[in-house]
Length: 176
Image 1 (tube, rainbow, N blue to C red):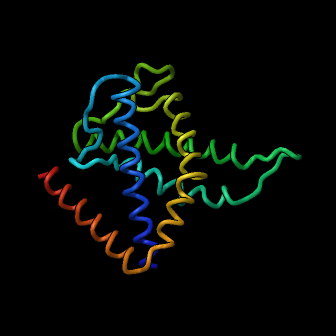
Image 2 (cartoon, rainbow, N blue to C red):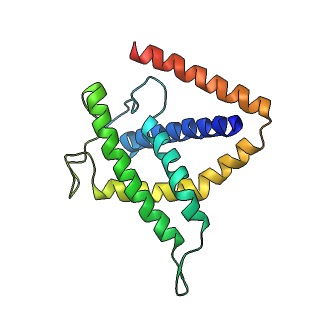
């Protein structure tokens, strides 16, 4: 059980860093707004991506493993995509309210997109999160599972402890 907790903590941190890289890439390369730290802490992570990844793992892995058909049409990937879009939209909406309550605002504004809700959510980013979630569930996560499964208990313990200590120091420095 403790091994699983350590693995999921590493997944959380890996996806938080990947989310930060994605956000910075959008700002610097796509939108050409220049660099800004897209997380709420000093370190290179957007925690909402880590939370979202764990929620998707815990809620959609069962569906992902099932074979659903409509006649001969394989529906499982479509159903997983729809689940990702719905869950990510709800996480992003809840995350915006939580961030607003804690720090007085949230880090994104979707007012430029059609059919936005208070600038917090919109179909365009939700569909992009759906595509990214598919890459995550079907591409990245199997690789990360192989990586952590190949670690000895000792290596996994040292790695997760080191990452946790770095995160706690960052949180203390960022929030104090």
